[in-house]
Length: 510
Image (cartoon, rainbow, N blue to C red):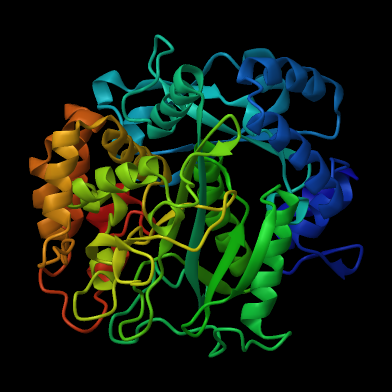
């Protein structure tokens, strides 16, 4: 055994152990005995926690349960802790299990290293684990003996950090539930592409463009096609993590995919957006490909969206439904829609947060960029799907898949709820503005969206002055690194400086 350990450093260079070539991964598999659960076992355990989470069990109640579990389970070695920055980029760090058990209330990190967070002179921030998000992880994707927990970012005094919109969304949802008995139900339809080659975005060449992993597309993908194999693996991983899958399929463009899963609470749905993209990227990488969530990576083909379905319920009753209402929606639902449409251009930058997003909103194509709602017109910002008492909802079609889930959902809900609180006079004013003959469209370029955002008192109020300024500066810096007039070809700047592609601390290297 000692000889094996001494030889590990040479394994990757083609050295042998006992006459057989072995790589480091094989060596690890044979020398650890950490927990490895089947996908069926994972689904069962993760769904049990999800049911408790959705039934309102608190993080403190779950903490006692899982601290005891971690202390007793020798098969767990590490906890992967997740949080998101201001732009919604997922950050992961692993804590040793023993450290979490003894010091879970004192987890700190350097916030100055995260774009949009603290300045260097006030860098210390805390992580407050949300124990209701505890998940057992597939060992084939994350390694054996690991579990995952999402966290909120807190200031030194333990209060929600102003730049952490997971914390703000959590607070909003809890207040709605506690004070009004209202639950926000939400589900997303997240589209993406599979391209050939690992790190295809980081090595993007605008002369060559992206190489599609396959030419298979909508409903016509062979069972062993690369896209079908990718979708099957992603669906299996989602199922294991308790997504409660509904359907999965190739999308309209070649090598494009979409996997749908069950409605959940707004906060849980936001977490699942980040998990969905993380799983997709890892699985694609293992297949020698790249899963991309750029909104319009290939000009001339369908872009990728993240249609967001929303409804509100009270005492388990869908208050967006009314049998005799217009399109079977209640007055509450129509007021909620008005609130979103009234602030459409204010919201545009957080719903479409990258330079590349505005290729998808190009007014020359059938884009969901018209500031109106419709039950039939898919160019509308909001569509009203066919629904019944359980499924009545609105579908916000404008959202791009690279948006910060916590920020955009928080902003959408705040806008919609403003419609519920608006006076009759204000509602008449909004209806008059939106129902005119000349339908206004959303911004078709990032500079227009930034200008609306910069002037928006609504966004300034819900984000706070400091976050509003930081977000504006981040988006301006990306826009200024990309060509103002994008033209027909997808340009290197809009890909390489994208917030989900490049580590922004290394921008000076480009």
